[in-house]
Amino acid sequence: MKHQHQIRVRYGECDQMGFVHHSRYALYLEEARTEILRSNGLAYKDMEDEGIIMPVRSMHFEFKKAARYDDLLNVEVEVDGDIGVRMNFNYSIYNQENVLLCEARTEMFFAHKETLRPLKLPEKYLSYMK
Picture 1 (tube, one colour):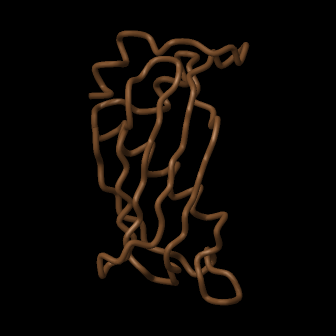
Picture 2 (cartoon, helix red, strand yellow; picture 1 turned 180 degrees about the horizontal axis):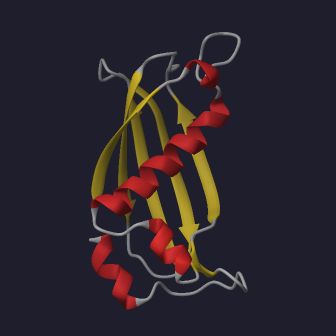
């Protein structure tokens, strides 16, 4: 499962050096992750409304070059491996000139919203993840 999502860098996302602040990349990944699900017919909000959440277990970034104000970023996101209790995503972020700026990986897990106990993703959602 792959998806490409575009994000325009806003002025307020940049630091004093004119680069996108590293903390903003986590938001870019979250937006792309939400959109890969939506592109396959599943709104993450619907899962939450049914009591299933996806907390972040781990997040890793490797920055190659700086993104800057008004860059048009292409965030490529791909599901990596099998989906059960956990779901892994790989990301590559490019600018409008197709220069690789960042590679990232997140490991998410599924949990009951009320108890926060891990759970295997119910079968009814797996069809959206292919």
